[in-house]
Image (cartoon, rainbow, N blue to C red; front, side, top):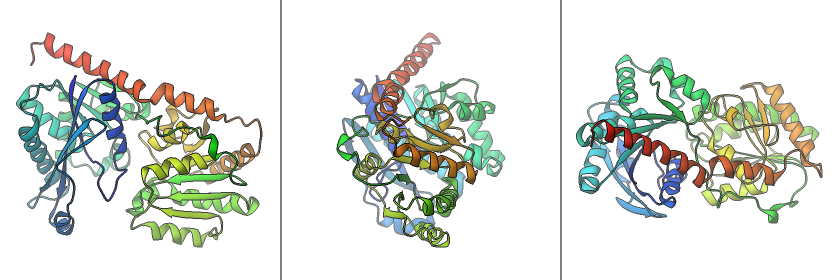
Length: 400
């Protein structure tokens, strides 16, 4: 099949891991024998003149056979969601006309309604090609009341006109039920060749090493990921286990807030901040840790958990929607969101398990589960079935 993918956000030179699961999914489809192109528009308002002038992204590139076309767009007249919507859709349409219009594309796949889905809908109206949407955005849970009625109407139209809506978890599918009734659940993909168990990293440290990673561009991101809860819980655990440590990977303007919390709760000796991590460094840190922990207040899926699990590591996650589908007794612990005491107990349990020869968390079993459910082959196969069904339905209805 010839597939065009439109992500709502995408990696850049400054943020090389942003939206990594969009690219991973595209690579999975390419490896399955499909022709895959990504179109992306970097959109700037008048508040971002410096970023506009410093723009250095390549207009055309290729990663593991996936063709990527991108450009920058300016939205000087309207701000917020409204201005971004039209500018982004216009930029995607321009890329389509420049690079795609003479290709025999069969389906368009947008990641996130706002506003990749809107751009896909506009392309569909012109080309008569079907589009599907995979929704990832936590805004439907965390910022539902902040969505204007006009934007809400547009989003409803985008979802209803999509040939299929895909959600990354069952809980999220229920949440989107008011927008669409043709929803299928397909999780995010993980590169099991990159994220894998490593025998070389066994037994290289004492105590239990916990790892978490998150973006630190804004304090709101720290709050969403529950980093404040984690540090408070760690402050109760660390004094009893001086050989254990917590590593918080990530960089950004809000990192100073993390430093402030670490000092406030007096855990400077047991917490390390390695800064922003390249993808290869994330893999290395996951292979070196004993447990990955991220008590987010809400996750639509949580790809970092399955990346850690692909490395054979158990996880501690909050029962907040996404992780509920894949965290089980053999691969981790679910705690209630914002429940500090439950998190303390989970950390203690992982420290105890790390010191056991026959740990209940067996690396090979944990990694095998991820490979079966979320590998390139597994996810590409599920997506191809959706695409084939949509394309056949369009043909039977007399569509293009």
